[in-house]
Length: 298
Ligand SMILES: C[S@@+](CC[C@H](N)C(=O)[O-])C[C@H]1O[C@@H](n2cnc3c(N)ncnc32)[C@H](O)[C@@H]1O
Image (tube, rainbow, N blue to C red; front, side):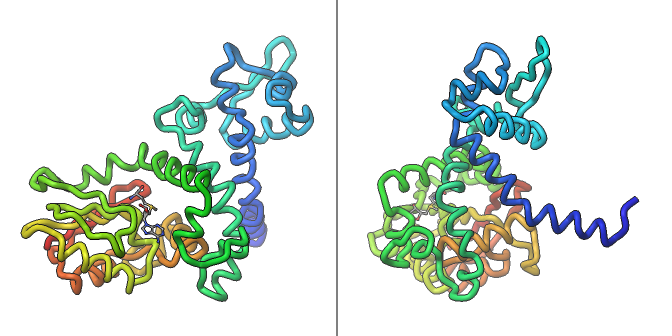
């Protein structure tokens, strides 16, 4: 039995070391550990992994054994040698050939999001996204920052698609959408381009990028383009009514602080944006997954 003080110290250590766990995962993905082990005809020893990847044997062994502790790899002994293979988790979510692979999102988090989070305290001070500090981009404008190179744009879009491959189904099943004949998935330069007429507009992972003012502007534009009887389906991660959970959504909200101009919101905050823009009968459905659905009628 540990004392409350010891338990508190353990928790503190877990928090201070949390970034190391992320980096183990990021490095293993970046190096191609999971793909190599999935393609190998049999489990591989760390020397063989190092030889295939062209990495240092000591570093490789440390990385592989840490992956075992994190349940990203399994180890067994064959002929006196430790050999490694993927776990169910890594086979499903970290191997490129898997339809549910999250590899692009992991790389995006490693190469972009992580660097912005290095300036979280500054973001709390100045309330701005941190692309200037993290990448030296010349402007805080989101489009310039998020899509600052073709490679970055493609990785981000592929990463979003990875998450969609797991979380997309539950949000689209949250409501019966069969009455909406023409559906518009809103993207591109929606603040200025004319919006096509449709029965339902999907705003997936869009409103959380923007301030209340910009969201109101966009929702008003959508309301004007929307056919009578139509609606809008907002797909976002919902905060609890008091804004103090779930932790994942709170972290996403801080992520919006370091990477965008927006925040995650509570159901009441979405309703407060939708109603003045002319949408009524706001319904929120928590899916139990990463993303939730909000349907409102014109
Ligand atoms: C986070 S992505 C979401 C894409 C898609 N709906 C999904 O869920 O995968 C944000 C969308 O906002 C659009 N967008 C419009 N104006 C933007 C701007 N100034 N900065 C960043 N994204 C912008 C992008 O083209 C992109 O389609």
